[in-house]
Structure formats: structure tokens, C-alpha cells
Length: 186
Image 1 (spheres, helix red, strand yellow):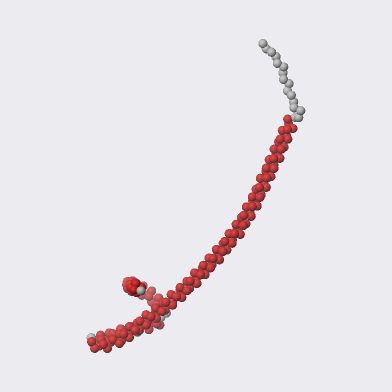
Image 2 (tube, one colour):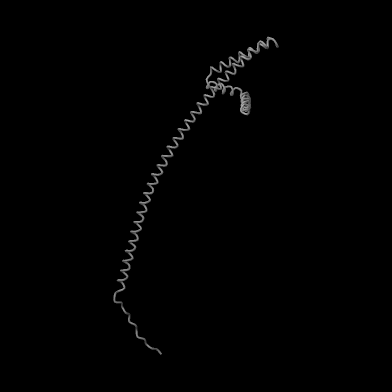
């Protein structure tokens, strides 16, 4: 059995649905526009702050760079001064050593000259003449040493090393040994 049901009549709301929908869309669009505007404002503010920070960092970096350049220049100047002082001191010591060496050669020459008569008496005139000849050679060497500048002596040393490197090595070893003994005894 079938019963019949009365058809349901649709009820329509008092306010049309499309009006609410349009209002919601309108509000959503406004909120979306406000969010976009807020995002654009935040972006602009962030860019502005970034530019300010960038400018501040550049100023600080330039300051540090300037101070580093000044310090570098100061250190270079100090190094040049110390280098000049070291060069002057080395030249002074080299001149003193040259003078002392010359004096030692002259003293050794005098010693040989003073002992030549004794050699004449004890060993013969021939050995006395050897001593006098050696004394003259020592005096001549001392005079040549006094007459030459340090640059000339350096050039002479380079030339001697070029001509006979073996002798130069032997002299260097001997000088090193003497210096080691000299400094070890002090």
C-alpha cells in the first residue's frame, strides 16, 4: 500500500542567498586586498630597514678598512725604520770588524818583524827573511783592507767564490768553527 505523501514545497528565505554570498565575497576580497596591502607595506618596511642596515654596515666596513689601512701603513713604516736601523747597525758592525781585522793584521805583522832577528840567530837568515816577507804581506793586506769599502770587499768575496768555491766553503767552515768556539767560551 502505497500512501501518498504530499509534496514538500520549497521555502524561500526572506533574504535572498545571493546577497549574503556577494557580501561574503566582498568582505573576503577586502580582507585579501588588506592582506596584500599589509604584505606590501611589510615588504617596503623590510627593504627600507635592509637598506639602512646595508648603509650602516658599509659605513662600519669603510671605517674598519680605513683603520686597517692606517695600521698597515704604520706597520710598514715601522718595518722600514727597523730595517734601516738594522742595516745601519750591520754596516757599523762590519766597519768595526774590518778595522779590527786590519789592526790584527798589523799587530801580527809587527810580531813577525820583531821576531825576525831571533829567527835569524836561531834558525838562520833564510827563516828571518821569510818572517819579514810575511810581515810585509800582512801589512800590505791590512793597507788594502783599509782602503776598500764594504761593497768592494763584498764584490771581491763574490769573485773569489766564483773562482774557487771549494776554498770558499773551507774558509766558511773554518770561520764558523772559530765563531762557535768564540761564542761557546763566553
